[in-house]
Length: 500
Ligand SMILES: [Zn+2]
Image (tube, rainbow, N blue to C red):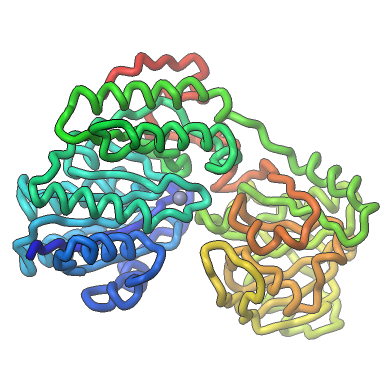
C-alpha cells in the first residue's frame, strides 16, 4: 500500500501589519497526527480533501503536522525555523513515503524570508528526495513563486472567492499526486506570473471579470491532456517580489503544451487588467448615500469598511466612517470598534453613565483621528454570543470580551469591544439590545464575508475605499519589495506572454 504524508503551514501574511506571529501563536494553531484526522475527516477543508483522495485510492494517509493561522503579520524567524525543522524531521522519522500532500496558503512571509511557501517546499523536497511526488493546494490569494513550482509536482489553488471549494481542489491535487506516485501520469507544470494585481473590490468569482476567467480555467481543464489549471488572484498586502497574479497549467507529460496553454491563459488575464483596477466609493460619498436612504425606515445600508477588513488581518479599530458621519451631521449610524481601553471605561462606569471617550485608531494613525466625544452607556454585555442565523464559512461562536453599546453626543451608536471580532453576525447587535432596522447605516469591517450574516437585514451595500492595512486602493501603500513594473502602479507596463 502506498504511504502518503500530510503536512502543512497555512498563513496569509500582511506585511503592513504590526502583529507578528510568534512560536506560541504557531503552536496554538497546530495539530499533529491523529488530531488532524479527528478535526478534518469528512469536512470541507483542504485536509478533508486530501484524506478523501487517499481513501478513494486506498492508500495510507500519514498525518504529521498541520498549522492553520488566522491572517496577521509575518511569522518570526525562530517560529519558522522550528516548524520547518519539525516538518523535515517528521518526514525523515516516519518515512519513507511514496508521495507528500502539503497544505499551504501561498502568501506566507517570515521576518527574514519573503517566500515562506517556496522555502517550505524546498525543505520538504530535500527531505524526501527528487523522485517522490509533492502535491500542493493553495488559497486563491496565493502569490505563487517559481520556487514553489520548482519543488512541487502538482500545484493548484481554489477557484472560488468567497472560498467554498477547498475540499474539491484538494481532492483533485491528491488524486493527481497519487496517480503520479503510481507512475500513471507525469505532471508537466508551466508557471507564468502576469505583471498585474487585482483590486479586492472585483475579486468575487461569481461576477465578471473573475467569473469569466474561471470559466476559461474550467474549459481548459476539459481539454485533452490537461490535468489542472488555475489563475491565482494573489495577495497584495504582502510586499514581496511574487506579489501579483499568476497562472499555472499542468499537462500529462507535455511541457510544450503546458507552456502554450499557460501563455494563452495569461493573455486572458492580461487583457482584462483595466477591469481589475476599479475605484471605490469615498467615505464622504458613502455617508451621503446613507443620508439619502434615511427616508426608508427599517432598510439600512451596509457600509463595508474595506481598509479595516478584520478577516484579512486588520485591527478593527478604524473610526474613519464614524468620523465622516459626525462631520456630515449624520446620526443614524451604527459601528463596531475594538477598543479595550474604552470598553473597560464604559464597563466601569455602568449603564446610564456619561463618559468622555477617545475612541479607536490605536494601531494605525491612518484610520483616525480617534473620536473625542461624550458618550452615554446604553447597555453592557460579557461579549460571548452564538450566531443564530447564516454565517460565512460556518463560524458560530464569538467572544468579543466585555462590550458596551454607547451613544455619542453627536447621535451615532457604537459597540465598543475588548477583542477584535469577525463581523459575521447581527447577534452581536441584539445581545446589546440593538436592532439593525433601527439604523439607516451599519458599518461592517469586511469586504465579502459579512454579507452572509448581514445581507438579510440590509437593503443595500456600499464598499467604501477607506484607509488601513487592507485598503482596496493599493496606491495607498509604500511597497519596497514588489516586482517592477507591475500594473496598475506602472501604468505603461507591457507583457510579452513569454513563459518565465
Ligand atoms: Zn483567500
